[in-house]
Image (cartoon, rainbow over all chains, first blue to last red; front, side, top):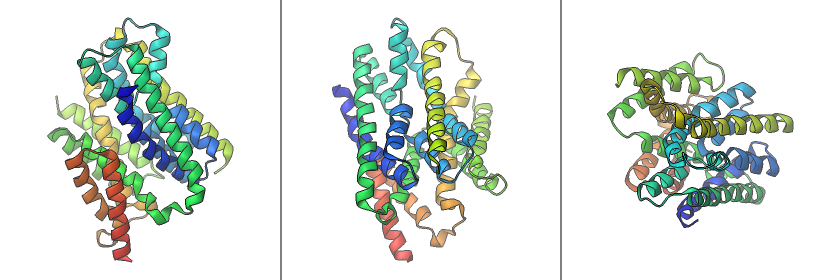
Length: 214
Length: 108
């Protein structure tokens, strides 16, 4: 529980931003809460929301969300050794709360030798409550605050993605793949409809990175 | 945006996301991931974020916006700097919004 508190503090305001944006995009309070409660993925939800707002095909929403959340496959593979002896039900329920932040906390906790199913469940539960609670708060308050554009909320997503991008640039290969992806995104946005350029550029740049950097 | 469209989209997102979380934990613990796939996965987050940021700051709302009149692009620079030095997602998001409001006001 205690380990989850920093995540809780980080999730509430970002969840609020999601709730406000979801409401301004036309979601009901129940839809915003269900989205956060069932998907529990920061960037994936924001991207899905921006695609839905532009009226994208369902397939585009699902594929974009899946591509962004593909990293969970890697996280899941990385934490699976910790849970080798846990029952299937514990593995299945812990998988639900696997995010960038819970992954980072649980890996650090495991390296300190104190992680178990109970501690990881606590981290997951506290994070979920922060994310969904923040969403409900934002979706509920959104109507009181009025037009969120006035408060610059329109830059919340670009700002968060910019920060996440900087956090992802761990070495030179990541910087080069990022530059390639950004260039490909802008170039392909000229020819591809809607926001398909994001998926196309990301898959192409990651493939080049995987082939070139071995 | 119709209610049915949102529900179907959200349920689909939830199913796809959960599948990606639960399959490796329950199955991949017994299988070795090929090295090439592992490397590809390691580049996916940075590539996605870069493509997203490029679209968001150069083409806000789907339209090209020149660098001199673009508060999104200008505000992204201090946002990146704040995150680089503080490692705070919340702090850099709030700082970015403040810079965005300032640039938007300055540019009229």
